[in-house]
Length: 447
View (cartoon, rainbow, N blue to C red):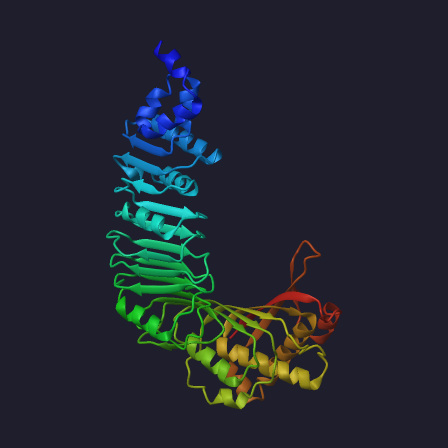
């Protein structure tokens, strides 16, 4: 009789009644009929009290319910979760929070034991983000990638946070971090982000990219974090100087060669430079100074758009700088105005020789990988032949200390992709019929 009475109520009225009931009470009422069950399926306030009993049955039920809210795009006003040990279910919790946020949740409560919080491609405003962080004071790891709908992120009162990774999507997004316990920070600023870091004295590693920072900002950050050992900087503006007195590892990518204020040699140095302007001897001198500050330079990458003559006399003035020890030097030559096109030109060959001399002098690589045109390949081979022959007569080339070189060219038309190339003009003329064809080749250099 009770069930029959409940069924005669209009569905819209049942839905209204269910919205005033708690999630648990609405679940009990769903036993009355399919109409009550459908209304419970649409309940805007989700309340899970999950007590671990050695089985995953309850976990699967919660996961199924959240999948239904996601697939049906059912609005969520409040999401409450209580659990004795969040560390056992951290992965599905991230998924459930993500669904709740995507479905417009306004209130998230009782996540005091949550350790890992990961949000990716989620739309939420600043108030919702701050509410979420406030109800998760014990998080140790925070990942926030490509989310939108806000202009500011503040991580200020997280007493146990150790690791933060933020990849911005919004223009002019401000990120402020005040976290004395923070040890690892990764931030991608989406070209126009703003980063403010204070009181992060326990920071051990910092990876920042695509955000304009000043030398003063970097100096204050490094000096304020005496434990900072690993630093990665990618396209963060014209940085003039890096104080590396406490660093052990530095990876840098940009358009300008920074100076290192250093008290000891780095254990690891990795550099990627884009060179889009005409180069002078001073550029190669600065590069050699930078590389000589590291015990190990496993890989250096350089992109050149112009090939111009280098005044070798200016390089000789900096012979006192220690010789770098670069394992692999990657060079991409995409000449914008046709340099080295006429590989038989005496002037072009001389220009290319000076460029290669400066490159080898500044980096001293064990292996040199080059991607460029066939014409440039011929120029470089001619330059190596000249360098090898002149080592007996030229004081400059004796100082370079190049004993020999093995050359390999990549050929994707054969099963054996890499082929050795003899250092002679006959072999070279066979392999470079098309001067504009892009080729990959490498030199194994014996110093």
